Length: 211
Image (cartoon, rainbow, N blue to C red; front, side, top):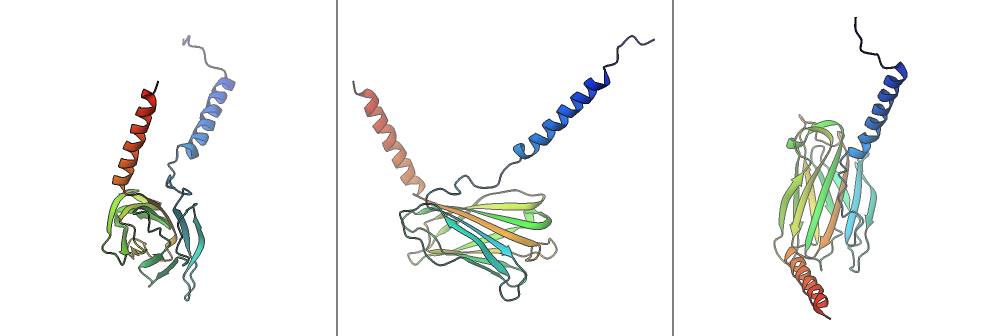
């Protein structure tokens, strides 16, 4: 005969309820947000483009906003277009006096697509000379309905053209690609930031030494 006492049903029910609540509440909280930290910062740009299936205007600029800036922004409104396969975005609102830029391109699809098959190219246009565009990060491989790609750009060009190369087999084409969201922020170049940081440290040291 078993001597182990059975737990009351209400105890088991209570434990299961608490577990379910914790799992539900942990879901959204534990989800990783792909919104860049610099959105809304000074000298930042945030633009959203939605596919609207119009043969004359297939993409609509549904949002364009900038953070505070003491510099004049190019007043040209960004625009997106496609040839049925590749999506092209012209984003001219860049800040020349600050020479370094971060960019995140987020893409939202109507179903899961493989991240490793997404290819985004950034072409910089600057009358003063060539610009180095470096791919520095992404959401990674695997199936997802949202992917992002990060770029660093130096020096800051007048405007840039972003091309997302289509892939019919992977469903990476307008119509499957429903929305594109782009964030940028213009900064002093890293060397300048390092000098500024050293200068701040030296000021703090001098203040600490004062009697």
